[in-house]
Length: 279
Image (tube, rainbow, N blue to C red; front, top):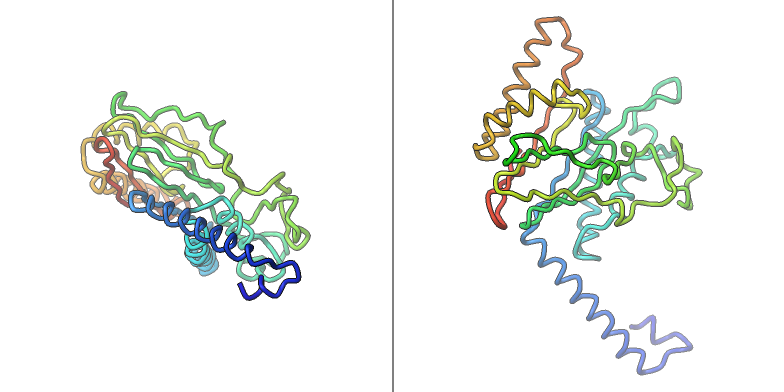
């Protein structure tokens, strides 16, 4: 108000209008924050490699996410696509970030990270944004199979830091594989619905399943049919135990280099407005 009052075009009625606008904005934010009581957010980050640089990249993504999330909730009362675009830019190759991105001596190679963030509602709807991460799977309790999800309707960006919007004012500072037409927007948020009781949303890293191997998908599907009646935590344990046995077989064959980090996250619909979550 002090700034507004010293402007040459200030009129007394402007103070009332300004205070009313700010008050309404705070009410809107408060209403959005109230919705978070029934919302669960899920962040999955997978940095390529297993060394210190990979740990640094994963840590950078998590720290940046938490810092930006606090700002988002304070400003909007909810997450917006702008949050994820800022994380993407933070990981882009700029002059100030090259060391953290693990640039090799040839000046071109570097390690990268994929990210998936989503929010699940009591209605069973899961809205998410995906930067290069293996897409979610939905196991149908009725059919006993993974449902066919229309991937054409699920926008998937390149991994973090590899693609910068062409209209970004500092785009010349970044080395982008190609420039994206526009920043992340609401239309880029994908949605999956857990419709029936017992439906399961299956989130994972490529150490569990890379999203392309049909034999591995069939094996996971068979496992889910056997254990789908279990609680979410026990489902996670069953998937992880299978992965550990697969790793042991790879070591026995001398293929330990194919073993990768593993994360499994299960969201299971228990009934109307009720879901269980475990990792």
